[in-house]
Image 1 (tube, rainbow, N blue to C red):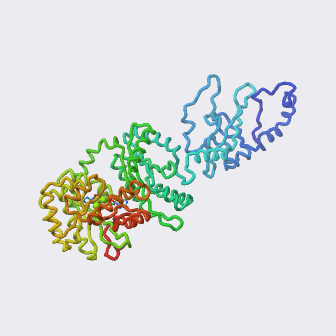
Image 2: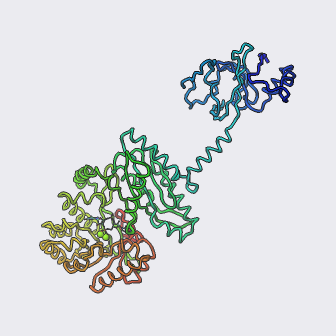
Image 3: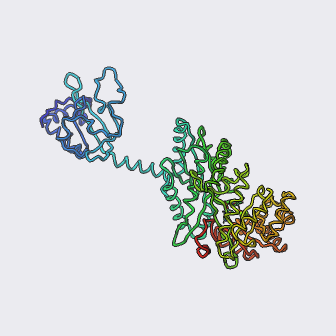
Length: 583
Ligand code: C2E
Ligand code: MG
Ligand code: MG
């Protein structure tokens, strides 16, 4: 070894009589080479002798192994060679000057854990300690640096922390992790001046999957849902599993409630495709509660989103999105924008008709389709009627929109199998407009559709509050052979009166009743009453919103003959040919 190290122990050498007392030390120091080898060269932990400016003078083999470098590569270099490039350079950290003490290189001031970079670029965590070696005159001469590899312990700790913050089933961040992330996002959002959005999501009828297919299948399904959420969110969003079948998406860069709605709709579509578990196809939907917050506490924001979710699920609703009320405070601006966009939409050809099958409950024969409007919005994607029909009611668009639907539906239906009928929803305002019956006649004539194949759907309140002029217009239409259906039957508490005012042909039992007809005895009794009422008055009855076999069986057993619902087909763009349309 080139450097002979004049050693003077900085620590007191122990009290007389102890095993390391002055006599023992004297004996050991008699052969410094042997002592150096024992304490330094063959020590199992990385050691270096470094001058006070941080230049490496001597290293032991353990340090070479730790850093992945040879002694030649290390000796003569500054300690910053070992520093991790992602750490703030120690030279930039403010120095803590201790009065009277000789300043050491900042790398030598570190006591405790730090990370280093090995020659191959990998990271190693070490526990750093040092021993100052003084000259005989008391000035610092060298530093003996000890670096103990603690990477394994560090990894184990990180793993523990990660596991504490991760949902073990799906691998998504868990509720505990959400609180931190949300707080962090809110701090950032205050600086950014834009809000943070939450989409609180609960799978509909997940319990039924668990009950019928078992918990293992339920777990598989949850993992698939988690994967879809993970892959469909943007980098600035975080999907979290809150527990059971509850998930949450934290959107950090969202402009307004419409932006958040767009995200919610995207998530909804992502869950729309059937899932496959144990060779079974499972169709799921989710209900969602949305909120936005800027200067809110994380807990308060979570409560708001949960409150909105509770409303979305109220009354057995499925696939519904509700927004926390205050988050809608600037909704007026959006509404105006929506109206002006919608005005262009009709002319720009952005409206679409989706068709949902109506079937015979006995053998699922296709009887016809209900036309349901959609808006292919240029920036917000495909919008359901709930997102824009109200805007149409607020201005003079009603008749323009209604006329487009009627004409388009008649034209489409004229190309189908002649046994299939088409149902078209008519708004109260449109029905009350002078010239409505002429419009129906024109739509039939232009398309060549036979009048008996057209059924107009109106709601109870439309029928109830219709003025005399409307009633006259309706009777002109029905006289031509067009039939009338009472939509959402039973929701208005005035069903019977409505039935007497207009020549109703069909009643459609609202899907809110169908949703819990199997599980709720009071609903079952009510639906039985509605079915008997319909039959007693010689009306056709269609049950809406049938989602599963149990509901279908119950309704079939109780005398309902026609049905519509996800169980038989979702609303979809027009099939290419009548054959392809069969369900
Ligand atoms: P509606 O006439 O009662 O139409 C049935 C609604 O229930 C549709 O929603 C349909 O997608 C949904 N639905 C059908 N089966 C199921 C099911 O099994 N489960 C669940 N959860 N939902 C089901 P959509 O398309 O969002 O339409 C909502 C409402 O908007 C319609 O209710 C109708 O009142 C109105 N609407 C749709 N298109 C038009 C239109 O062209 N003109 C007018 N004036 N109103 C329309
Ligand atoms: Mg309808
Ligand atoms: Mg309905």
